[in-house]
Image (cartoon, rainbow, N blue to C red; front, side, top):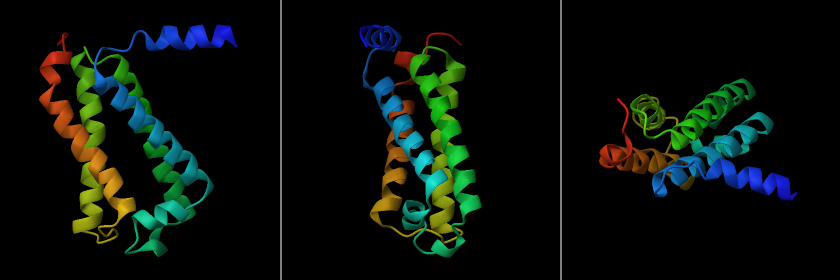
Length: 143
C-alpha cells in the first residue's frame, strides 16, 4: 500500500501550483462519475433534461457518457500541462463545448429547465471558463 501512496504523491507532485489544476481534476472526477452513471442508468440524466425526459434513451446516455469521459480525460491532461498553450486551450474548449450544449438544450431545443440538476453543469462550465480566461497568462509559458 505504501508503494501506491508514494506513486500517487509522486504523480500529483507534478501538478502546477494553484487551485486551477485541482479544479480541473475535481471537475474531471465529477465527469467520470457522471460517465459511469450514464453507462449504468439514465435516472440522473433524465433530471437534467427534465423538460423532455422521454428523449433520454439508453443510447443517448451511452453517447453522453463517452463524450463526458473524453472531455474529462482532456481536462486531466490539461491540469498537469497548463504551461502549454495547446493544452490550456483544449481545457478551455471542453467547457465551451459543454456550455454550448447546455445553452442549446435550454434555449433552442427546450430539453432542460432551470432546476438543480441542470444548473450544476451550467455553473461549472461558466465558472471554469471565466477562471480559465482570467488566469491564462499566469499559467501558459510555452506557446
